[in-house]
Image: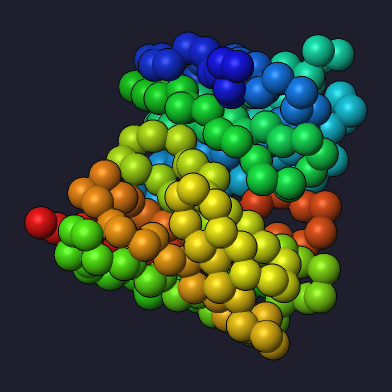
Amino acid sequence: DAGVTQSPTHLIKTRGQQVTLRCSPKSGHDTVSWYQQALGQGPQFIFQYYEEEERQRGNFPDRFSGHQFPNYSSELNVNALLLGDSALYLCASSLGPVRGAFFGQGTRLTVV
Amino acid sequence: DAKTTQPPSMDCAEGRAANLPCNHSTISGNEYVYWYRQIHSQGPQYIIHGLKNNETNEMASLIITEDRKSSTLILPHATLRDTAVYYCIAPQAGTALIFGKGTTLSVSS
C-alpha cells in the first residue's frame, strides 16, 4: 500500500501564475482534505472533498479550488499566485470524513 | 471543534515516558480526541484516537479523564526520533481536522 501520494514534491512558480497539485489517497479511502502549512505554523485546513463534492471549506479565498475524481484522487488549484502562497501543501485521506486521516508528505510550493 | 489547549513545549529524557497533556473542556459527547505528530518538514502522522475509554496501540497510550475534559498522550519509552510537534484535536463529528499550535516535544539523551 503506497499510502497517500502527492505530486510534485517541489514546485517553483512565479507570482500571478496558476498551479495544480495532485493527491492520490490511500487505498480504500474516499475522502480527501487539503491543508496549507506555512513555515513555523500548524497545518491550516483548506477544504475537504467527499463523493466528488466539496463538503467543508476553511477560511481560504476563491483562488483556491479543488476537484475530486471518481477514483477518489484529488487536485488543488491555486490561481493568481501570491508570494504568501509559498508553503507546504498537505493532502490527507480517510474513509469518510475525519476518521483518522492519513497524510502525504506534501508538495513544497515556492512563489517567486 | 472543541477548543484544545496544549503546552507549547515539553522536554523528556530518552528512555523515559513522555506525558503530553491536552485540555478540551468544551468537548461534546460525540467528539473524538485525535493525536497527531509532525516531524520537521514531514506530513503529520496519525498516532491514536479515542472517545471515552483509554486506548493503546503500538505507538502510544491515550488516557481520557472520566469527564472527558482532558486527555494525556503517553509515549512509554521516548526516543530521539520522537522529537516532534504533537497535536491534540477534537473535531466536531463529521468535520475535518483543524490543527492548533501543538506541543513541541524535545527528547534528549
